[in-house]
Length: 148
Image (cartoon, rainbow, N blue to C red; front, side, top):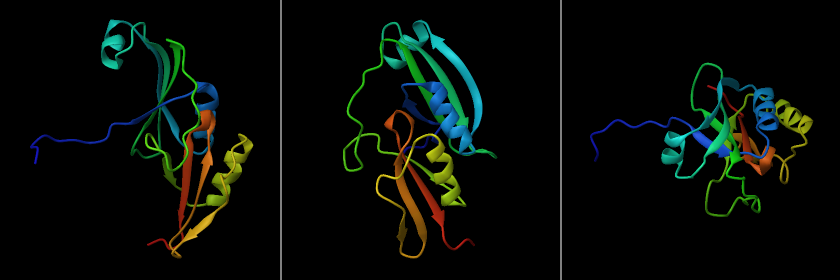
């Protein structure tokens, strides 16, 4: 077992349109922790891309917790691919615990984002659903049915 300390700093997601993605996630209640445009030798080295140049936004839930780092590539050009499906290997989804799944879905709908199939109930414990967010990101909402 390693003796070092480890924690998750953030989850990074490349997006087509950073403004649309920031609007979606802030409408859900996340807060912008910072925005920047990054480039230069340090960025090329850290990311492993020559000429790396991107707009970034860091989002976090009120009161802290995990962060999302969204980035829109200016160079090199972003590469479109088929949206990932729930059973494919790779970055799967970002999940949010919400206290009102209907309200979360109403916010998502205002951004043109709807459940992949519907809202399910898991063992009388959670109502949950997957939807496609901006840039086809799979987003999960889960509402605990019994709060302690």
